[in-house]
Image 1 (tube, rainbow, N blue to C red):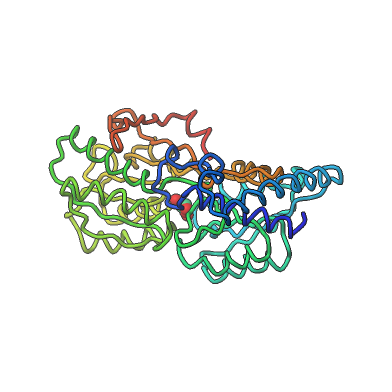
Image 2: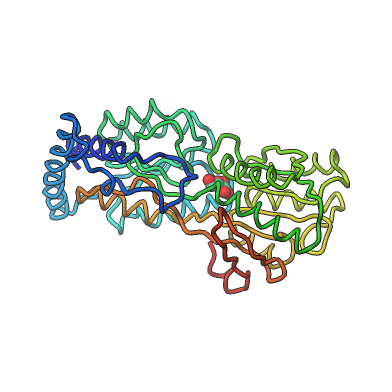
Amino acid sequence: MKKKLLSTILSVTMAAALLAGCGSSAAAPAETAAPAEEAAPAEEAAPAEEAEVVEDVEEAAEAVEEAAADSGAAGDVITVGFAQVGHESDWRTASTKSCQDVFSAENGYDLSFVDCDNDEAAQKEAVRSFIEQGVDYIIIDPIIATGWDTVLTECEDAGIPVIVIDRTIDDSDKYVSWVGSNFKTEGLAAGEWLKAYAEKQGIKEINALVISGSTGASAQIGRSEGFQEVADREGWTILDEQTGDFTKAGGQEVMESYCKSYEGKFNVVVCQNDNEAFGAMTAMDNAGVAYGPGNDVILISFDACTAGLEDVKAGKISADFECNPLAAPFVEQVIQQLQKGETPEKEVYMEEHWYALPDQIVDFSIDGEAQTMTEVTDDVIAAQY
Ligand code: AHR
């Protein structure tokens, strides 16, 4: 793909998105996120500079159509660099597989994949190495939400469009599109479910321990904010919140220390992913703490990967709030739109479900919107990632 041309498209796409007022907050519901093309009435808004942008869009679109046609005729491979967070969880494994399946040689891609092992500096280096390679597109799953503007400016200067997947970048909008989950909604869902379930069970007091994800990751920030919002409103006590880094070992270590410090004082444990929940269960088993429906402690988890849902079915996790890792096909759609000179949506939200067994399925709403829960059955588990 021609770099100069891509540079124009990138600038134009970002300018259009800025005009449209699209933010990067994961908290905004999908319906309110205006597609850039819809919301950019550049002709009406029209200071001289913006009018020029519109001309550029038209020129760029024409040029891209030609380039795409050329490239199609020549059967050009599209080169993609993907800076993945790491390999900390079952969710991450599913996300990596999804990207590798979609951006395969059979599908016309040459994928450079870097597992950044949860190291922020290594992730920026990976992005810089993609710039040096001169890939056509860069995909980033940002380990943490901030500190991105410099390296994204370097991508922009190199004319390489960036697509953000899963976690958000909160301090720069120099990327074309983001595809991922609404983490705050996930946290709100866990909180509103707990409120409704506790009422059904006649539980008057909530004393919760939270094992959070990697500090500063938007998945951690959103889930913590959402759950805390309900806790504050309902007057629950959050005894402690420490990070388990989204890993089984981290979840176990934090829960071991919680079992000692808060023995007999807690009735809810919230793990911000399934792997932390697996570790927390081992720690509670070892400490003789009974958890799951009908026991002293309500265990809540996020992700709803296969093994997480098996633990729901086994009566260990009371409710599991999905984070859908299969975003790669939507990222590919964004790339295909760019190939055709179209303007992709700035934000694309994944569809997600809330899982429990029938006795734990309760009615609840988020911001007035009624939620539907999904019963965990063998078929549901078999279809999960
Ligand atoms: O960013 C998504 C989160 O990161 C998932 O909840 C977790 O499992 C992963 O490690």
